[in-house]
Amino acid sequence: MTARIAYADVEVGAEVPARSFPVTRDTLVRYAGASGDFNPIHWNERFAREVGLPDVIAHGMFTMAEAARVVTDWTGDPGALVEYGVRFTRPVVVPDDDKGAVIEVSGKVAAKLDDEARTVRVDLTVTSAGQKVLGMSRAVVRLA
Amino acid sequence: MALDQSFVGRSYPPTAPYEVGREKIREFAEAIGDTHPAYTDPEAAGELGHPDVIAPPTFVFAITFKAAGQVVADPKLGLDYSRVVHGDQRFAYTRPVRAGDRLTVTSTIEAVKSLAGNDVLDIRGEVHDEAGEHVVTAWTKLVARAAEDTAGDAAGKQGE
Image (cartoon, rainbow over all chains, first blue to last red; front, side, top):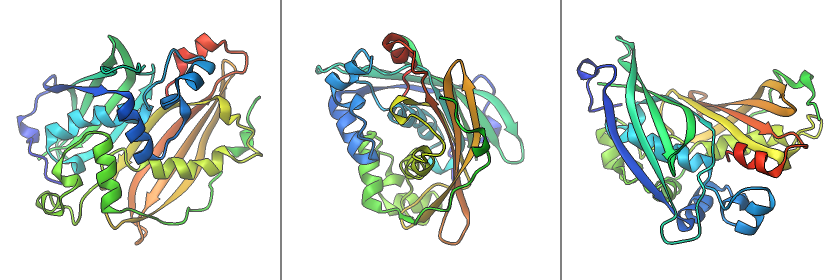
């Protein structure tokens, strides 16, 4: 584990670089194949509407994967991740057009947990179309 | 339908090993659009101290969720899978999953609750490598929505 951010250099409240991740129907088909999650609510509009959804929605685990990138890009080593959890509060609705949806992720250092283990907690804010899609989105990382 | 409370604490036998391949990791990293070299280049992974390419943090969910399937599909538990949505997900890592791993999952039912007519099921999946060493634990909360939910309400709660 070789994070490029030093524990000593990080202060509570520091922001990690925010990012936005586009998601289109094409993205969802690829993710379905790679993850093995072929639930039709993620690719079949007719089915999604039948079960009461406004349209096809992104896999919750896809959104969770994108949100993690803000943390792993910041530390430089994905292996520095110690804990990661989210609550799926709202679906990311992905319309069938060229634009799709955008997942916006920002984060800040919420706490320095352990001086010896050099772990910090990063709290993430994850939105799409102006609404929070993940709640309690928190990562613990071990810094250098 | 209320779930059978006696299932709390029940563990299921370890799954057959899942062999993690470099190309499967590459496929997953491409699907989430993540170009971090540790996912595809053994040398780049080596520079970070990993013996082979590592998998993105949520990669292991495909393995633990499949293992959770034996819990979810247990007819004695009485879960209506057609109404299930993913509520929460959490991972605690001892080390990242990497190519060459042969991983087994032991699933345990941590909690069975009924909240406002919804059935809530907490499953813990302990992932170990071939040497029996702990790699990661995954906690998955599944919510089976109450049958009387309107479609509109259901959509608002739909998470997965």
